[in-house]
Length: 423
Ligand code: AMP
Ligand code: GLY
Image (cartoon, rainbow, N blue to C red; front, side, top):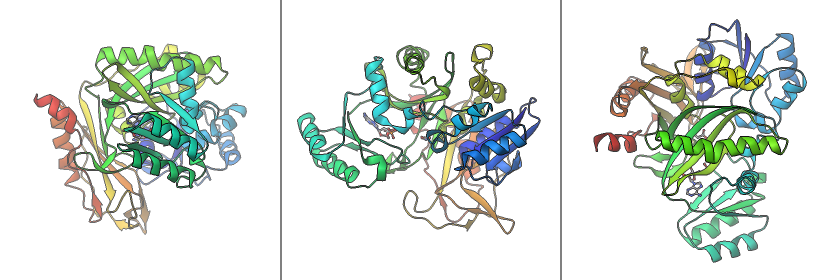
């Protein structure tokens, strides 16, 4: 099978690493890729915003499957362009990608198909939104409707914070994404991520994970794209997984098909496990970053046939096997992230990898043959262990073997699960 992978982050490095292990693979390209991805395939300089260029490349090279990593090209319709040209693609249509592209769209799907989620209202102006927030009181959650790189959500513990967040959205802090605002009830509980493949009519549950969104130890400081993750998430017991499938994922898949937007790709459900059970916080329509780094470390099966089955509608014919171990990843980020940070700082060495550890590149480049950090989140240092405690110790041993002066990381990734393990 000839494969083209779209993207350049840690998620795409994990996808590339896993796809490259497939005996079905005959030729592998990635665009734009990064130095880690380049270890597994040929990088091509395609402008991924130019969908017709991507289609032409896929046709010229007789690509059998395009795997789209990030959400932006999906929301912009890359999968539609490829499918119209008869090319199989892993990832949803633009219509189905609204599950991530519009929080209001997703809330309406939840309301229509009875999917448990926080009560909500949609607003297109500040006075009405503020009146509703005053009526509901704090804590309350304010969300810019559109894609805001994970920054459009304010969990307001006070009324003043909520009112300020509404002003931010309507005054353009998130650009177009904030032109509409969703105000949502605050959900109390433990968060978990759940990943499930869909081909539009069949589901294949993959795995659970937990992310650490805040930049600082003890879950303090501003939100980030994710500073570390582990899989599985202990809060996702077999019963919770079954309820999530029945109460959230299955009705979403059926509902999306019913409204003429069948969902092909991965449902990445952000869940709050409340005292009532699983409730949907949000959907993403692509793999989590850094969650998929830990999910794929645990996947024993060949990933390529699973992605292909989701793309061509044969998920009922495949299955996935998992390692029992826990995988944990620590994100090394540039000092200053999620604020401003220096670019092109040198990474002078990376640890030797064994079978149980892997360093994924998230924001690196080669400059004059030397590895430099170019992004906010730069490396994902990942390890397997029999327990979360062991996986954590192995991951931090590897972190300590990275020589990069401008890097920092959280030192407590996995803490919630380790507290449980010690209890
Ligand atoms: P999102 O970008 O929708 O994932 O939201 C970012 C983070 O805000 C989530 O991971 C949660 O920690 C928090 N959050 C979002 N919605 C709610 C809610 N209704 N109740 C409590 N926390 C929330
Ligand atoms: N780590 C959160 C995300 O990928 O959206």
